[in-house]
Image (tube, rainbow, N blue to C red; front, side):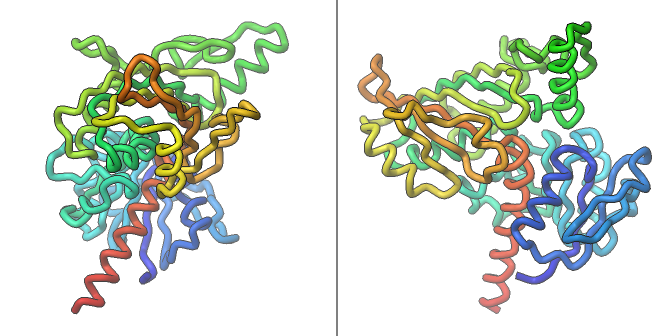
Length: 342
C-alpha cells in the first residue's frame, strides 16, 4: 500500500479524533497529515504516532496535494468544501448525510458492498451509523437465504450526537447524583436516566430522519429499493455504542444454529451469544471494538421464516471512523490491483 497524503476535516470532533486513532491503530501508511477544523480550533494540537500536529482552519485551499480527505464536519460543511477537495484531486470519504442518497455517490459498508467503490467519482459516502451496524449484522444472513422484511428498534447512545452530547450525559449524571438541577443544551430532553424518540425531525410519513435514513440507506446498500423495513429509533442514556433489536422475515427458514454458524464466519461480526450465562451483546463491551457484536439469535415464534437477534456496535468506530478508514483501505487495494494489472 502506497503512503497517502491525508486530510481530516472536522479533526477535533468525536469522529475526527477516532479517525486519527484508527489510522494509527491500523498502521495506515500516512505520508503527510492535515488536521482541519473551524477557526475556533486553530492552534490546538492532536497527537499522531507520538508526534503533535497542529489544527489548521478548514478552507477551500486546504486540499492541495491531498490524496484522501476524510470529512466528519457535518453536512453543511461537506456541501461547501467537498467540491474543493474533489477539484484538488483528493478522494473524499464523507461521514455526513450530504451525499448519501446521491445516485452518483457510492454508499459503502466494506463488508456489504465493496464492489460499489469501483464506480466512485472521488466522493464516497459513509452510511448512517445505525444503518451500518444493522447492515453488517444482517447482510451475511441475506446472502445465505434472502431477507423479505426487517423490523428494527434501535437504542442509540449519546455518542451519535457528538462529543458535546457525551459530555452532557456525563454532566447530567453528576448533577442528578449531587441533587442539583439537571440542565440540558444538546438534547431536547434529559438524557440521564431517561430515553426518548430520536432527536431528529419527524417527517410527513410519521418517521423521524434517523428512521428514514435506515430505510433509504439500507435499500441503497443492498441494491433492494423495495426492501420492507420498519424502524423505531430511540435515544438512550448510554455513553457510547448503539444497540439494535432486529427481527427478520426471511425467504426461507433458517435455524438459530445455522444463523450462528454463518455469522461466526462473517467479516466484521463477533458472535456474543451465551444463553447459559445470559451473556449477549452490550454497548459497554462493544465500545472500542471494531466488530459488530451479534447475539440473542432465536426463532421468531410468530413466523416460521422469522429470526430475531440483538446487536451492539461502536457508533464512533464501525458506525463512522472505522468504516471510513476501511473504505480507504479498500481503495488502496483497488489501486494496488490496478497497478499490478498494468
